[in-house]
Length: 245
Ligand code: ZN
Image (cartoon, rainbow, N blue to C red; front, side, top):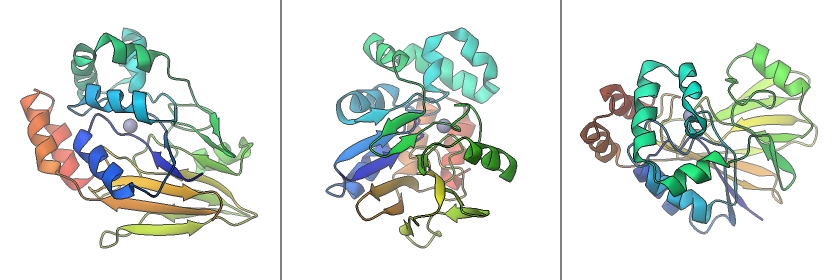
């Protein structure tokens, strides 16, 4: 069983479509670490796709807006504007689907998925302190997470080692899993990368090879930007897609 691991799609259909095309034939099941919606202009299209095509998915902080207005108090003004727009767009069926998404950690095969960290779905695993604490609570040697929109992650043997995705001129970078290391790894964001690389990010993982391949794919950023502006969403949500921040 080979997996396509995705996270943080954020209603960016164009990015998702190129990821699916470029990964075609190289996976058996799709896994998503949350944030199907928020920021982007195509929430229904992305949720329709998730409902039919994704085998394992957990909720992200943006997916939780369907649970009630109190969630919005944790959002910055831009995220809040986009969330209110999204709530207005979602069909009742898609809102219902998002409402029943499970909270991570969710066990998949012999690994697990979380949105933020294994302890807290809203926590950002960015710095050594949070990462070291998260490792202490892992029951699994391989965890995929999202939320930071930064592809790569961390490996723990005797010390924490930072894992990076491919450099800008490359399309992919492989990580062979060692027998004695524990991994917290991020497939990167499909729909709103924040690691300085504007290309859509994803991971291909084959448990038999014990190999994770971090991939990047260019997509029609301008097309999505035009849709974001036409929808009346904040300009900054279009601007940041061009720079991957
Ligand atoms: Zn996100």
